Length: 309
Image (cartoon, rainbow, N blue to C red; front, side, top):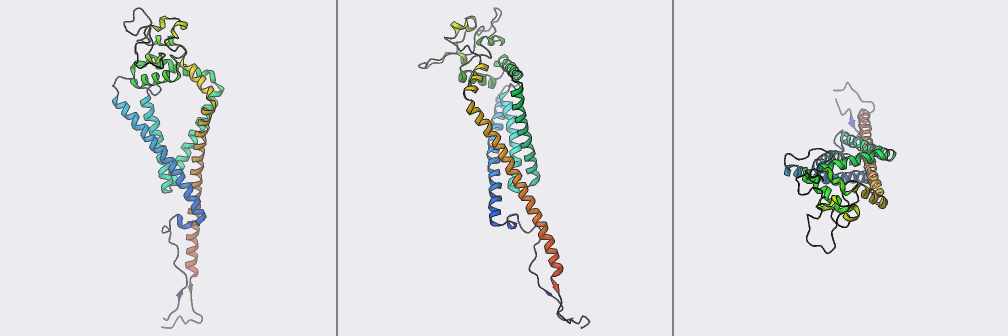
């Protein structure tokens, strides 16, 4: 049989041979790359930070003694490990999903971020509506920290830092330290620090070069008017609230900034998922178009004799 047919079509698109960028126009490609790499950079920064937090927490836990406090609310090292690990997993989903164009990972990342955002908003609303209950529980938690002051080195350092930073002592007053067994003001208390307060409560002079760690001894036996010359007598809860009110713009700015960052990452993840869906739909259309072109690409010359050998 002679030359009966001729292939008039060009090379068709083969599914899986063209990458995602090949299916986008120049302006579309620039927009997609901007969304993709901004999301990846944001997730990568938080991924590194969370890894550092988790590593510091793990190191602190290993360096501790075995009989120390091991509760989430009163153990800073355990809190660092948990927060760092959760952030590490979440940002890992965002990094891999954005870099590899994996919609499954991006959807998981998106859902988790939305849940976290809703929980933060709910916590803010509850804190605003039930301020008294929140303050009561915060005071109770701080009292537990004072009771366990010497049981955990990290907790002790955290309390000392807060008392030095805010120039306060105890939760409501300096006499709250009587709740701790080492500072309890009883005649039967054999501790050398009985009726005293930690040195972080002491008022330090500007020209003082040598730290006197015994400056808080016996301060609970003095009235507030006399004790305030040597130690801070105002509680830390009141000081922290006053600092937050005086720096309301800073606190509000940080809170709004964090929420906006989360919303921005949610929008970026949603946009990338939309782009990936668009490209997959375009691939399917190209595939169906190429199949129809294959069927229509065969043509025969006029008056062809099919019985000719």
